[in-house]
Image (cartoon, rainbow, N blue to C red; front, side, top):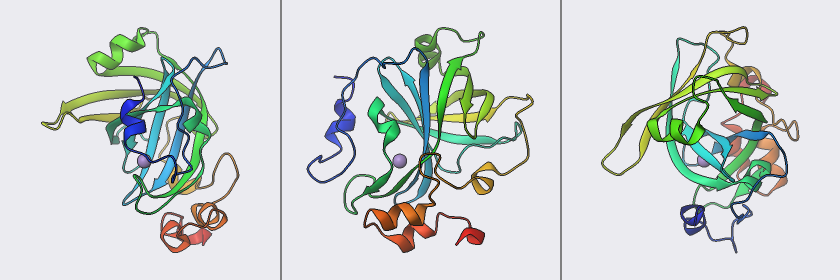
Length: 206
Ligand code: MN
């Protein structure tokens, strides 16, 4: 059961998140999505479609376009493909309670150096290209350690290419690629905690 962990953590009678099932995408290209998630702590969920699910990492500081910056990415449970379209509010008290924004999405492909994705994920080094609205070009995910609790730490790093930059992309492009809303707007529309969500929006946009 590929999504057993995902489903066990959630009560689908309460949360609006999709239950989902592992399945092949209708599209020939592999999708990716990055969801800005103001739960107990703000983080960015980085998800790559692979083998019928979204393989997922939580990136506390979000991605950086600066190749000298390595961003911690904690491996989390696989999510269903449908999750890539989820934007809204997970009720407080539920797993991951808080506001979720589709911050970026698009397609991805492995780089020729790591063409066997399953092997690369097992080995802990996946080089890949993103074609998103905000993130583009070449990136790498490298596993650095597996804790005693079985949770793996990875680093998300931009490769040097023409898309590398010292722009703080999370601050420069804070809006949803689905709805153009800020976190506060998403929370407000879904009856969530607007004041909490607002803390995740840039001060100048408030
Ligand atoms: Mn999350």
